[in-house]
Each structure stands twice: as C-alpha cells, then as structure tokens.
Amino acid sequence: MRDPVAAYKLLRRVRVEWLTIVGSTKLSLYEVYQTVLDYSKIPQPEDVDNAASELIRLQEFYKLYPHNITRETSLSADEAYHMGLVAYNEKKFQHAFLWFLYGLDRLTENSITSKKKLLHFLSYSAYNFGSLPVAIYFSQLLLNLDPTNDEVKVELSLYKHLRFKRNSNPDIFTLNTKSNNSYEALCRGEVDERTSKRQRALSCRYSTGGGNPRLMYAPVKEEVEWDEPRIIRYHDIISDKEMEILKNISRPQLSRSETVQGVTNIRTSQSVFLEEDNTVARINQNIADITGLSMESAENLHVQNYGIGGRYEPHFDAWDGSTNGRIATFLIYMSDVEIGGATVFPKVGVALKPKKGSAVFWYNLHKNGSLDLDTEHAGCPVLVGNKWVANKWIHEFGQEFRRPCSWE
Image (cartoon, rainbow, N blue to C red; front, side, top):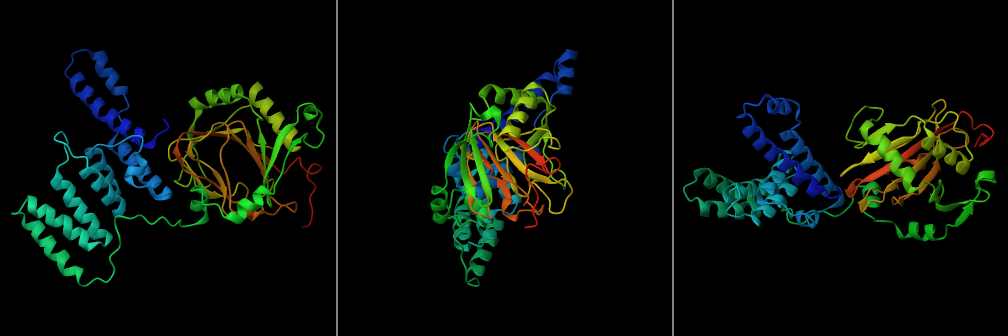
C-alpha cells in the first residue's frame, strides 16, 4: 500500500470489522468456525496505535499538517480523534491539537466522538503547548455547550489567571518548518545551491569496469553523483525480471532488520540475506565486473523492504579499525519511490533519489583502512510508496591487488 493514511484506515477497519465477525461467529455451533478464530490474527489496539504513531512521526519529519497528509485519503472525525489521542499521549501537543481541530471540522451525526470531547482535548492540548489564549477560547466554547460543568469553570479560571503570568505565547496553529539537522533537510529536498552547482559539474560516461571483457561490448552507464567521497550511480544494471525474482524470493523470508544494538527504531525495515542461486550469482558477477572488486569475502546479497515510514537513520556501513571491514557498498534500487526514501549523505550534503534498476557505489574505507567519515549516510522515511533495495557489502579480504593499500 502506497498511502500511509490509507494503510492506517485499513488497519482500523480490519480490526473493527473482524471483531464484529468474531462476535457473530462465537454464536455459531460449528467447531470449524471456532478453529478459524483461534488461528486468526486480529490487529490489536497497540497495532493501530503504532500505525497512528508512525503517521505522526512522518508529519514531524516532513513538517506536514493533517490536511497535507490526508490529501489523497481523508480521515473521519473518529479517526482524527484517535490520531490526536496518540499524539497527546506522546506529549506531541501541537500535532494533537491540529488533529483534534481536523476532527472538529469533520463531525457528523454519525460520529461516535462528541463535540464536547474534542473541545476538551483542544483546550488541554493548547494549555500543555503553552498557548493559553487558545486554551481559553476552546474552554469557553466547551462551557457554552455545558454551562453547569464546574470542572471546565475551574480550568477556564486557571487559564485566565496564568495568562497574565506568562510572557511567551507560542503559535499552536503554525508548524516550525525549520529542519533540525542536515539529515532532515536533505530528506525534505533542501539542497544547498553550492552542492547543486558542484553536482552539475560532474560527469557521465560509459564504463567497461577498467577493461573487463564482459563489459567491452555492453558497457554500463556510469554517472558521478559526488566527487569526494566518490559516489557513482550505475544505470540499468538489473532487469525488471531479475528484480521481481529477488522480491518474490525475499517476501516469505523477510524479518525485522537489526542494527548492532538489535531491533530499534533507528532502522525500520524488513530484510533477508539471500542464499546464492542462478539469479543472485548473476547479479554478484555483474557487481564484481562493474566495481572490479572480488566477491570472495563479500556478504550475501541483502534485500530490504522499506514500507510506509520505513527509514534508516544516519549510520556507517563500516566500523573504524575492524578486521576485514566493509570496504565498499553497492546499493541497488529495485523500485521507484513517489515521495521520500532518498539515500542522503549529511556530511557532504548529497541526496540520491531511488531510481528503479540503478545502483550507487561508494568506498566506506580510505586506502589506509581507516573509516571515511564523509560516508555517513541514511535512508529517508518513505512517505508515499514502497522502497525495495538490495545491498552488497564488499569486504577488504581479496582486494589487496584490486585496491592496493596506502599510508595516506
């Protein structure tokens, strides 16, 4: 599914409708129905909460309002209320407020969520964010609906008292669009003009991999994406059929990707290391021909799927001082991504968009074996679409005469 909001709605709907089925089926005397229920996997409340939380994380990262992220798929008042509650419980009060406001605008006679409830949380969210005039405004609206509510009267009195003691009054209606770091800026497409000018001076050519016989009559299209560290993109190096084969082999085996710390939110993808078959062997040989490096000590081809919100925060593929470290990375893009999913290098200000059938290659280590700090990179969150990649991590052993060492 390409749309994060549609994915969230589907998960909610599956849970609600499946619970209805469960309620009806439990009344049946047929044991086979009961057996089906025992093995069914109903989305749990935490699954729906996690989907909402991921949507909010995307909003934070890409600086999106509810009306931005729901452009293709709108949410009902009840769904917006749930989004607001998740944000509120995570203490993301501005996003909570904006979702409650979105829900207020979509209330209908069929809504389960009441206007009172939305006004209550609009007031609370504004208060916690520090926007007291807004908290006062929505508390007053709530009091107008329920003039006998003593709790609201007390809260309104408190907000009015605090208003005159605070000097700051942050704007809860307007998101801060300033990026927190170069990683976020690059993912959002904020490329420095000096970087763009430098990239325009780089070159493209047909490459034979240093005179490799297998590439003499079918050279590869080589594009220099960056000069230091040298990042090369190779176009059309894998066929649609090969990409589909890799995806089909991988899907049943995918599991949550890990980092050196195990499963964390730093890396949210599914992946698998593939055993070598005819297709994988052909791809490995192609990588060896293009790069001129030995696959003798390389890791198995590593296929990854980044679904909605999938990302990998800034990291290095190699570790400084390790024995037989990852000397180079060959990253194959097996899908286009509509919005998000770029590979970015924050230290040098480079962003590479996924292009189906292409691959990017760079050295993680200097010739003296030390880590190239400028190769720190990240996979941006996927906002719309689905991202498939295949990594080939090439190690030092076997490269002694292919990439000779130096002291520098």
